[in-house]
Length: 435
Image (cartoon, rainbow, N blue to C red; front, side, top):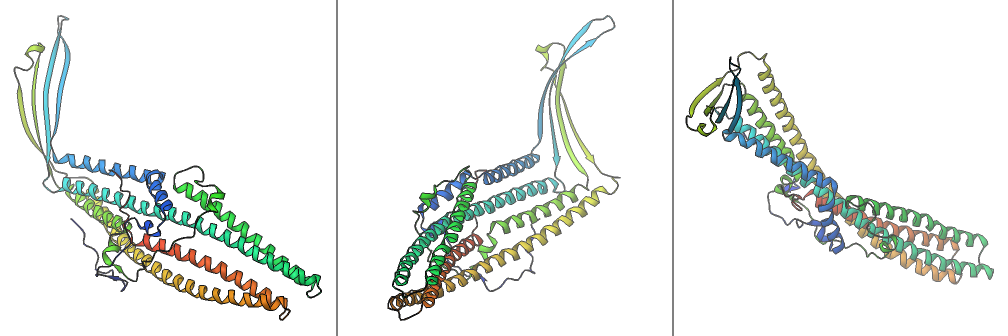
């Protein structure tokens, strides 16, 4: 009844059969941030979408238990009382009691197939829960670490503004001595004021991250005040990097496992529909007694054992159509599974490419930034002595501001790509629902 994985799926060399160290199960702990660890643990408990997914999982497990009940006979006990009227207008009370049992013989495997279908549906629900748990961990990590980025950006902007204001005093001093034009002062003032726009944007992004963090934590308000955000430290970057990914890690992804479970459930549905086309054989037994005197009710039992065979003859081809429908559903599930595997592989590969790209970009920007700082330091020295024009100093200042902002953005992009990579290779088996 189990469907094999399609042989037509060919993956790139990124995925190997060799063993390789993967991130920890609780991958967010690699950022070495105790507050992040606490927030993710809280979200895995308090997030309402995750609680709904857990409830759906319990529904599937309960349905599985119900489907397995057909393995056993159904036994019922009966106790009743009736009143009879005779021609002389007299009445007689009759007591009755009995036990009845029925059992369907699973000749064609339909009951087993139905239970298997429920089991695979429960597996799919469990995988869907793990997919959402992985998403919750990723979103909380993104917004919390994003708060750290905005805190660092606001500190950087404050430092930049202080440097530019110090330079403005130098320009104003040269203007008073007749060594600089009024336009030089205006341009330096404009550069100082331009940072206000960046500050407004960083503050707005900080507030958005706070709101989104509260949302994924299942809270109605931000967990931190704005002044507390300013005290956050910089993001720690994990040391571990991946170049290739074990093939088993791809197969262990919860979205892939969910698609595979739904494929198996669809295959079991074909078996159920096919079994319904054949005769159903049932056994029934009863043990009954009736008497006007309740005290003698259990003295004269009558036992009955019967078997029945139900054979569909004319149904307007509905059962055959149902088999064809279930087979089409199986083909749909097979195509969906294949597409899910390809999309999962593409997501992992893209995460690896972006991780390498941002690492190289960050290193290049760091090197450029060091040169830009040296350049500005020398330009300040030359300008104070009147050896260069103000335009040269202004260009050096603007270039340093741009590179500092680009480096911070590159660090954040690298962090986001690392989160995406960890999510892409995670099986999501943390915060398991208690089904």
